Length: 201
Length: 410
Image 1 (cartoon, rainbow over the protein chains, first blue to last red):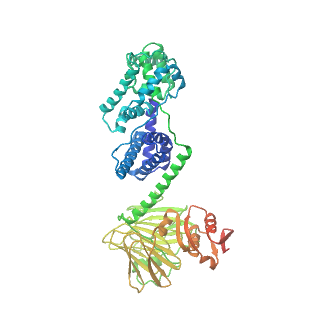
Image 2 (tube, chains in turn purple, brown):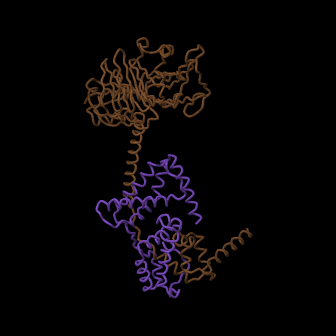
Image 3 (cartoon, chains in turn blue, purple):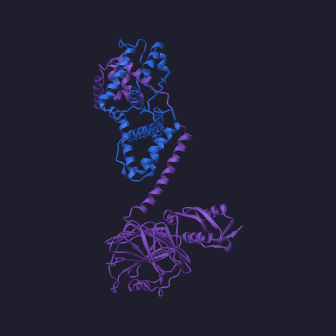
């Protein structure tokens, strides 16, 4: 937590330097966040080129408007929101062109337990059930799970990204939790032992 | 030491207490727990191991929450190094393009300032011009022509005191109190009049190979190119603003409705009209040019009818013949940004400008001078790099001997 806070403070200083005309800071943010932004964008579309175009638009836009940008202590969130808006605008425009009614791109994600050890410790059956359970989440629930448990964002940040109030996001999460209880109804994970490890990724 | 240890123990204890009856749902709502799972640190690993070992938290609930986060990880789509690099190149290209356009926009639309650039001829013929008012004319006459072989930028004050400015470029700013040079205040005081009671004129001489930026007391800005002399009053007259130029400048005039800005050269008088324009003029040796970026500009030459220029027009004066044509302004003002840009221009003209810009002697034969060249030259490059570049597109060969360049047709 502490390291995360420091990170954010550093970002704010560098962001302010960028706003006052420093090009090195600009390059710094590109290098630092382009990976995350790319992975993020691909949750809304499988089209790599489109995501890259939108990332390009985001970076060009902040460059051209740098003197008008406000200060921020959360550059990553700022860029994520900008990318999401840019992507959605493109979809909206495309929709208008093709007279398609679906307005919003759908959040998709392919969950996978990457840590083999964990999988070994969970019974085959349970592991299968969890996968099934995650698959049944709605796109919006998946999106919250992604922000909260993959990107590690705080609720405040999730609300801003989803443009929803705290209670609505909370409801989405609670509904996903209910599904956990369908897999582990008796508050027991039979054979899972936790041991000396708490790492997932 | 001991005390600190207990304090840590105590605060850990309190932290553990917080999680005592946590359900899986509660763990999953806790930022510290989430961070510990996805970005574990030595401290956080230790913390949770202890909490479990000491049986403080509900192990099963913890395990459910833990499993939930582990399961919700994803197979990440990654951008490749190559894609990342290409994307960056595209971004940089668009940004550069933006800066260029912004520059043009500023020149054309933002009429807070007006721009002129002009230039002129080699050698001064002070007695010929008929329309110089007495004060400016006598001022020019009285000011000694500076030794042009000197390699420093020189600022000559009203009392003939001369300052030599070291460096490739100087930034000179006149404010109400005095002069700032390269953003440093100096102890020079601005005076309205000379000791003899005449209006105080200053003179800036920029030798070949150097450039300067001059901000006058009215806020007008002059970019001064190589081999140029500018004479200007420290404080302007109540009715008009007048400066004298021999060489090449880009002038950004601060608009004042009732106080026209007048630029005088050996053969011409330029008057900036109104407030909403920018204008550029240019020199090419025996040929003289004035290029207007925006606004409108009145050009008078001796005994001839005045001409009013519109934006994107160039006025050319060569051997007494006057011409106005539409041009791409950018080609003529890009030197301020360290670039020369040409569209089918005579090589002789380009080489003369390069010679002046770099302060190097370039000799060439007649057949070379009539070749035409198009392209961009980056003035940050060494002169030999630029000549090499021209030689790859034009049928010329060059050699350099003791700092002089000789160019011949291949």
